[in-house]
Length: 428
Image 1: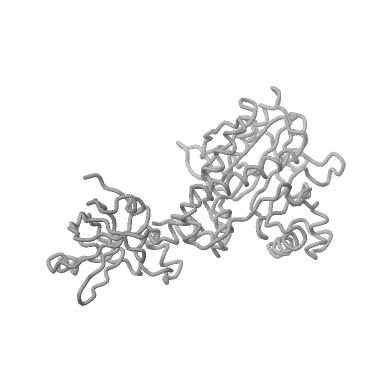
Image 2 (image 1 turned 90 degrees about the vertical axis):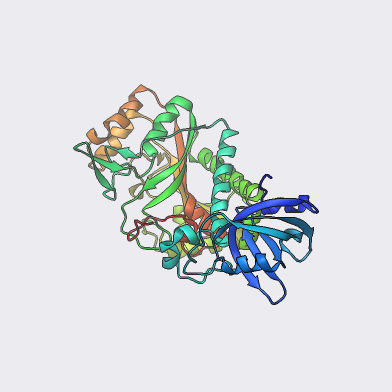
């Protein structure tokens, strides 16, 4: 008899079926016992009246893996409107050692560090797994949206010979006796691949050796990177980003509706045109000094409140960041060279995306590196490609964990990350 999932039970009323999963909870009443079995799709309620089966059930522990063969009976008060009766229960392994928290409770009461220490079992809780389902659905929507626009998915090296962002916050390692680094981003490679496919994207890990111990930073996170050629300026990139976000949220609605319901969240609407303000105007709105070189988290929160109040939008573009705060490959604003054709996208008052137009002329790269006192040699393999013809291009990168955390209302990105890596954590 083929195993079926809990969500398939309503289609089998009156039939004998086989399910399998984990003992989620046992309720041992005087005249009847209930076994709740959890599988990847949800919960099944098994009604036990036979004394022998009940005796065996009493010996099981929560999280023991079992197989149940029983008859499906309609019951509007049971999960999915059905329950299983006259069961045969067979353990598929030894009795499990119960985890240090109750997975059957609506919320996990353990502290986040305890959950992370026991991640393989904590992630079984419906609220934790729901966030990961939303993450997977968002990535599926990301890919589907870009595939429909003739983008090509690429896979680039995660071990590189020089830092991508001209910074010191890199993880150094030994590469057969030569110095190497974990990639801070696929930035150089995705730009070079514009010269091959014109439109590319990548889903992959990036590494930042930044000594942050905050609720919004990880040392390793998943970056959703996009780069496209033949743009007029950064506004073409922003238009693609807007469509991509809409596609990601549509993917969550289509593929992870149950997870959204489990967490009790609403999905935001992406405006047909996301409101945008120049960096100088953003400083004024946030009440920051006019000579502030960047936006602090408090400024971002103020801008998020403004976007919601003035435009009814959870999203806000801030354009024209000072060139001094952008990477050397960023294209300056031709009308205001001290400012960039770059942008950040704020989502509910937090920076989610950085992007913009890139330089595409070889001589401009030489000038940009010289202006920052950077030698050309570490970037020779990257910069040399621009001698052979590259179109005007630009792109962006979305931090997946931060997106899911803002979407679900999680207070900490570690709540939506399966096995986070940060300043203190290398296990499990």
